[in-house]
Image (cartoon, rainbow, N blue to C red; front, side):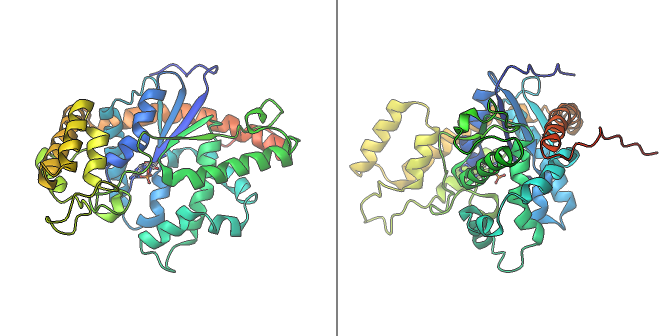
Amino acid sequence: MNDAPTAAKERVLTGDTPTGSLHLGHYVGSIENRLAMQEAYECYFFVANLHALTTRAKDKEGIRADTIHIVKDWVACGIDPKKATLFIHSEVPAIAELTWYFAMLLGYGRLMKNPTIKDEIRVKGLGEEYSFGFLMYPVGQIADVLAFRPSFVPVGEDQVPHIEMTREVARRFNQYYCDVAGSVDDKDHEEAGGVFPVPEAKIGRVARLTGIDGTQKMSKSLNNAIYLNDPPKVVKKKCNKIFTGRGSMDDPPVLKGNTVLEYLDAFVEDREKLAELRAAYEKSEIGDGHLKKEAGEAINAKLEPLQERRTKISDDDVIDILKDGTRRANSTAEETLARAKEAASFGFFKREISFK
Ligand code: AMP
């Protein structure tokens, strides 16, 4: 069991939704930042299993299996449960309760203008068929973040509109209930008596990794992802399919918006070799096939040690990690909830719940 993290460190919060295994987009968009930040910050990373219900309500076994997969991926990537608090969303009730308060601070029109929501409805083909809960999830996400009063939220670019709404709600709560003046700078909200900091998005080294289709964001739901647990042969096969933007092999190489170049840039560690490959490609001395092979090798070199570590983590290890982390997460989130309720004049007495 871990010691509670020291209170002096600034906090970081982020999570992943169990709608599939993690892919390279998650890695460069958010996980790398988590690895760097777990050393110096009080980090909370969670599996957003409640959010998975937005598109997967009938698939209870799938959500559960992916919850376990994701924690294995995190630990395999180097996220250390002794340094960071890893927890499961559905066992932190303060988040659901805060969602109610925050839902009242956000206009419906404002929510529907969020470009990520519009994008998801379009890309996932939800049409008019999305649940009421689907629209609740961005509000829930605000509560996920603010329950931990973090300074930073490491995310990919697609999450920026959500973080912007989170910042708006934090300001509004502090202004309505904690007498923080509208003129107070975002960075000074807590000092001015606000319950919530106004958190900042921390965007990854690659803000938006493109999928192998060469057009859309790499995503679990678009069948264009290379997963962290894809075997080397599968990675090679997927890399061979990368769309490079070239209509026919007689056309000149595409140098802008070419996904194979994007992957090489993201995963080839030897920067001299990368420059040589680029130069040879520009002069058509090598073609798409050569670059795809190099991309596959660079990605496999990155994934191999991670996959090796993953085999050593059992399902029982994951449950132990989540149980321990969730206990600590609840302690922080309950403290936030009590402070928020007190500020909003809902703090009548200390809650006691008992059941047999
Ligand atoms: P999700 O799987 O949608 O819960 O995303 C988990 C985290 O990974 C979020 O911070 C996303 O912004 C980030 N992410 C997901 N896909 C990508 C991508 N293709 N490029 C960069 N970041 C991504």
